[in-house]
Length: 287
Image (cartoon, rainbow, N blue to C red):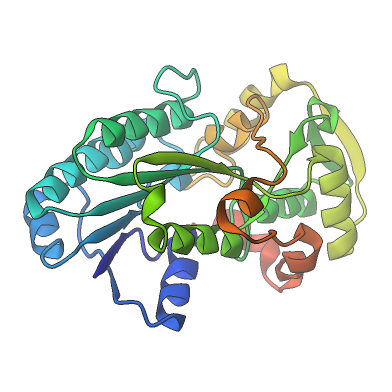
């Protein structure tokens, strides 16, 4: 039996659909991740946990500590009690408990606690994921819709990105389930395309039919401008965690997915047609 925390989130929806297609016995976690009694009940008969729950979308450091760090610690305690045989944890490239950026620091702290636990584990560090319902490509296009006639290019758009399709990442997670040799390892994966942010934005706008004038934005101004525009939202479209991506490269070997999992990830233009759906303009105002 596989227990999936965060099963209704961006990665979780794709993962649960994939597990169902493959007739794997899996169930979503129902309850608060910090509730030991609920965790104890949900872990009965479970031998594998895929730990996806997180508070990144809320953009609040307090929630990172409460949900991500403390929640992971509570989960590890109950996994040890339930004798769980494998914990799979998706993390981020650049995760480090000593990082300056709050999200990477929280991810790094979660990694450290998982590595120090007695539960066999696999940590999958990934670059930015994209797909239906993401908070990357959809945010980029959504912001361009509202910033007519310009499109912002932090740092002049010189940052290099290596995005990975969420369905390919889910294949990696399933690949970990089938390979016991990946236990107690940290694996880094990313897409096979390295592209400058400026070129990525241009291709996304071309795909969706929008024309905008590139407007370089100095990185020094990025945080204060985003804070002024979005910090008052209950569920901000652009949080400091989105902004932090422009300061820390998310790169991995080009063949990382092929080498570890035996397949080549999809190129982003082959799957980015989901950006053409109606209602994307209002995506910024929904959680």
